[in-house]
Length: 176
Image 1 (cartoon, rainbow, N blue to C red):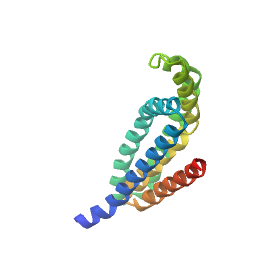
Image 2: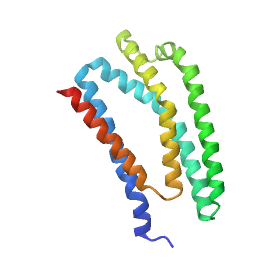
Image 3: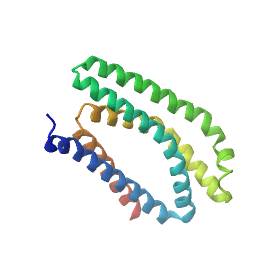
Image 4: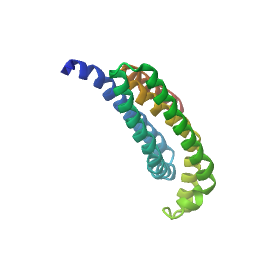
């Protein structure tokens, strides 16, 4: 049976992972704000735009997580692998489609929303660089869904903690 303690054991690493992600976002904002207003504006606009793509991946991971949790509960462990690989294929293809079709058209598309030429140029550069990382972001959400689905969430908090720490250390080096 599931008790509050068992649920908490699964939930607290996810809570820590969310806090770690906030540290990463705050660090990015502080660093870009120290560069200049154009960089900060470009990252804010570009970040929100990229978040729409990431929401597709996160939503898919939530669905995948539910199916995997059910298969885990039914002790159908081989089917968890099948769900994992089908999800991986979907995420890979979706991220590559976004890369191939969006990068060439990013400046034209973004010009509908951004009037400043400087912010548009910086936002286009930001998005182009970040889109290259999209397959990796999709892979991270794939593993997050997998580990959540099988109830092994501690690895998520360790990974996000490592990312947040690296982000702080690498940015701190540039602040001096």
